[in-house]
Structure formats: C-alpha cells, structure tokens
Image (cartoon, rainbow, N blue to C red; front, side):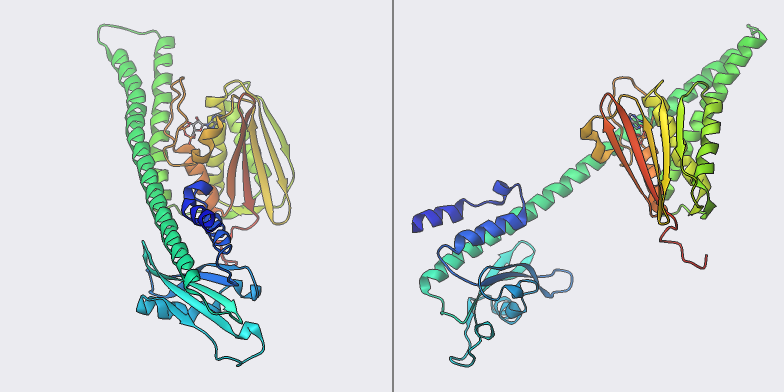
Length: 397
Ligand code: ADP
C-alpha cells in the first residue's frame, strides 16, 4: 500500500495534467493525504517584486475549511520557515482551548523555488502532533511541489520564447511583404509613366486614360499602405488621438456603404440597421474600421454578398459584418488581429497584415470589442461591440 502511494506521488507530473498547475497540486495533495492526514495546507512564496511572503495556493480538506481563502493561520510559521530555511513545528499549549479551530498544530517545510524561497505549511486543528513517518511523506510532497514550480517556470520560459519567435517571424514576413507591397505599385507607376513618356510613341486618348487610371489607382494603393504603417506605429505607441463626438452608427454605416457601392458597382450589401441613439465615437476612425472590413470582404470573399446588422440598447451598440465568402481556417483565428498576421493563401492577395490589427486597436480605443466567427466554406462574421460612452472619456469632455 505504502509503495503504491509512493509510486503514485513520484509519478505525478504537471505534464500529465497538460500543465494545469492547480490540478497538479490538487492531485498531489489528495494522494499525500492517503498517508498523511491534515486539515488544510498552504504554499507560500516570497514575491520577487516586494519581498513579501504571499500565499499562492491553499487547500482546505478537513476541519477549518473556511480558512482556505487567505490561510492567515499559516502566515507566521511560513515567515519563520522562510527566515530559518528549516522544518518548523508549532503546537498550541495543551488544554488551552476546547475549540479545535483555535488549536492549530502547524508544520512548515522550506521550499527552494525557481523564483526564490517558499514554504509549505500544513495544519491539523486540535492535533495530533506529526510523526516522523508523516514528516517523510511531507518532505516528499515538498520536493514534488518544487518540481511542479520548476516545470511551471520552464513552461513560462518556453511560452515566452515561442512568443518571441512568433513575433520575429511575423516581423520577418512583414519586411518581405512590405517590400513586395511597395514594389508592386511602384513598378506599375514607373512602367506606365515611362511608357507614356516614350518619345518614339504616341498613345491615343483612351490608352493614355487607361494608363493614367492605373497610375492613379496604384498611387492610392501606396498612400493606403503608408497610412496603415503610420497608423499602426501610432497605435502601437499610443499616439493616436481619438476625436470622440456624438455619432449615429446607423447614419455612419449608410454613409460608408454608399461610398463603397460607388466604387464597387454590383456589390450586394444587405442592411438591417436599428435606429439607435448617438454614441460617442471617432467618426473618421470608425469609418476606417468599416472600410477595412469591406476591403477585406471584397478582397478575400470576392463576389460574395455582405450583410450588416446594427442592434442597440442603452449601454452598447453591436455591429455585425458578415460575408458569405470562403471563411478562415480555425487555426488562424487566435492570431487574426495580431500585427502583421496574414493567413497564408495560394492566391497571393496583396496585404500587410495590418488591417485587422488597426481595426482592433481603434475599437479598443473606444473601449469596445471586436471578434470574429467563421465557418470555412460559408463565410466570416465580424462582431463589433461599442459602449454608448467609451469608459476612457471623462463626463465633462
Ligand atoms: P491583410 O488583408 O493586409 O492581409 P488584415 O489584417 O486585414 O491583413 O487581415 C488578416 C488576414 O485575415 C488576411 O490575410 C486574410 O487572410 C484574413 N481575412 C480577413 N478578412 C477576411 C474575410 N472577410 N474573409 C476571409 N479571410 C479574411
């Protein structure tokens, strides 16, 4: 029996519970309690930032369950254990009190954690005292706790590295993308301008107009690209000032739609807009968000109908922007609003991965929220929730 518990304890590993830290400790102490009965336990650790001893995990199993929350019963002994680095016991004076909860038998073990010192403290309300055998079990549990902390700290370091690696890769991709995105319109502009300027050729008016239209469109493309880069840099550094004014979302959306339909004849747009009270918002920036969603639908869901819906109550207004295009594979959704993130596709669509990042930042600057749902093969739906009054704005403004 003892051997079984021993095996069970030593086999426990945070990786068995997918790194779920609390689950790991819960199963560790449930197993330990088969050999060593205690009422409550608490793990303390010295906070690096301020040197204060804080409870980081507490479990109440037996008597005195209500003590779980902040485990003040263990604070003193935890401080003693951490100061001395030694096993420490504390028992109440015999017969001092008939209330068991007022008679904690405490047992503290030092922990050497990756972040510094800590303590594992057990309590038995009303005794009995701890035996030498139980002490061995508790020592084993303490080493397993340390192992768990080490695992967690390694996992955190790995997560940080993975994040940094992803960031570097996105930046590398971005440089490649941006060079391509700058070269393409510049190539067109240079090519058509050189053709128009050729001294040995004369172009008829229709051809000249065609070439100039291309130059004009490609210049717009360049301006948009540079604007996005500047916006992204400003948003990243918190330097984009929002100009909040009362805005009727319904009117703003109709306005954006009229302009889009002017540019994209035949684009099917369904509107279901509730008439709602004005909200405080930056008209220019919100139009930019909706324009961006239109640009994306036109680019990634060509020919698909778009539906826009606005609903409202007194606290918030919600715009859903849905297209019936190809959708987005689920694995990309967690990163879709990240700076520079692009879904790799075989069609070489032009883009920078900045559009949705900028949308998210603008919506967040309104203390709103943007999210996406998509069904591959069926379409994509963006949901924008805006508060009637952004929290950041003081009432006197
Ligand atoms: P960009 O369009 O410059 O690549 P965005 O940040 O605007 O950058 O979009 C990120 C990615 O999200 C795009 O690369 C595209 O693959 C995907 N995406 C955005 N909107 C849609 C949509 N409506 N349908 C399908 N894919 C979309």
